[in-house]
Image (cartoon, rainbow, N blue to C red):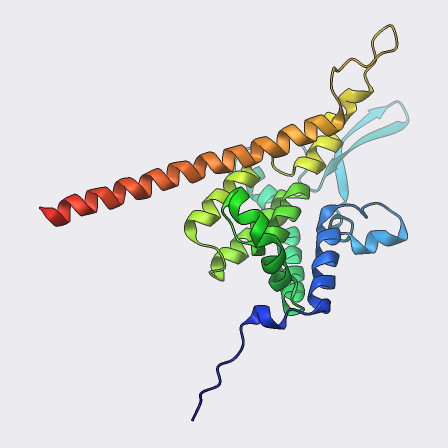
Length: 241
């Protein structure tokens, strides 16, 4: 009697899985962020932000002047302030993990593996399953870290692949969000003659950062490969002895 083995998950990757992958890429990319109606399809918009509390108050005559601070307050230091900072990361991480589990149920990770592995494997040495974490890490360090941890816990990436991918995320973390929220303002500076004060463009800066993230990840790949080769050589010598 012939034994019928179940088909691999990749064999069931249909149009719905690819649609879910596209939705996930847009959801984590930040393309739809803002206060418009389509902001409901953006991770950062739905994740929201903590409110503000009163930082300090001064009485100027009959007028009371207050300054606003985040929920962490102002002037914190040491482990106490670090705890509140870590507490602020929990909602985003939980939301990201919950979202990725729903997307995984509808086949987004299977579609990512099939589509992106031919690209990410030679580029970074990681499987296409890490594609969503890569997209998310460009917008939010919390998203990238939580999705990468989830991939490692489910054994969808190896220890070396996790380390290389973490290296990619570590350099210029949340590249798009941080650059456009702070660095892009430099491109509005003008010289006295009306020309731009910077000799380059926003697009060139984005390309340089992305390329150097890939360079950094591949430098770690070389280090890990060298360590494995040296370990194998030492074991061979010990075996001969």
